[in-house]
Length: 290
Image (tube, rainbow, N blue to C red; front, side, top):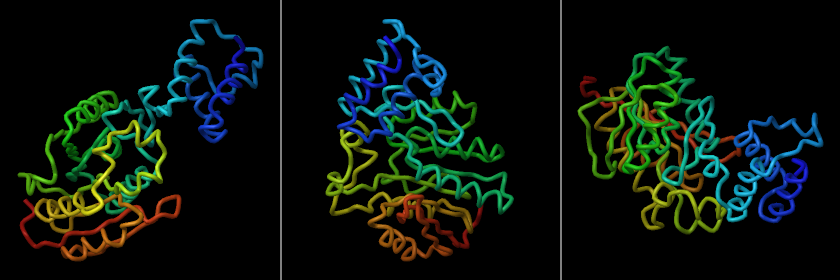
């Protein structure tokens, strides 16, 4: 079958489910993933023909896309900044907003000329935050914590694949007040979507991505932030920094948690979509930095 005809079938089947531009993006991602074809192949070879064997994974992917399965899970991989990561339904698919949070941390580290630092990523999932920080701060000691053993398996595989050294911890931050380690930086993108906000989300997220990594109860939506802030008070070095990705609708409430716990230099930043999404605070406890 002609490759251009398969592209037309993708649009015919999927344009009522996704924006047209997104359907084109799916098609080009899939031909690159399964066939190693560049996206400009049709411009150079409009009559490019696929064999039956080559067609099969594309039509299988089309069937899964019709069921709203995320294309990243279909391919089993995604990109985060300059890393390629394995993803599956045990971990969230990394978002561009989280890249912005990581860039903030890296900019601060480079501006402060900090190299030999200790970092903890809470709720690491695929490991996207921890791996990127470790890759770009080679002298840093990076730890990554998650309650899910399945998520940690994915993150460990990603660390090996990207040749970075991470210490992984299996624990629930809600039941972990302290560790025998002090950190210069604690960072987290915890669950923060309220149950009532599900209706605003697309089914390809709510039906496939891990619910325990997304949702929090309406009556206690900041429970993870409270636990992370308390942990950080006990485990950050003097003037250590806490970075958080936050729910745009609860950004001020989350900021207030930091203020109530005596964090200083608090800064709330917007993401590329103009939403309050990233929060930073410093801990100025005068305890020992050992």
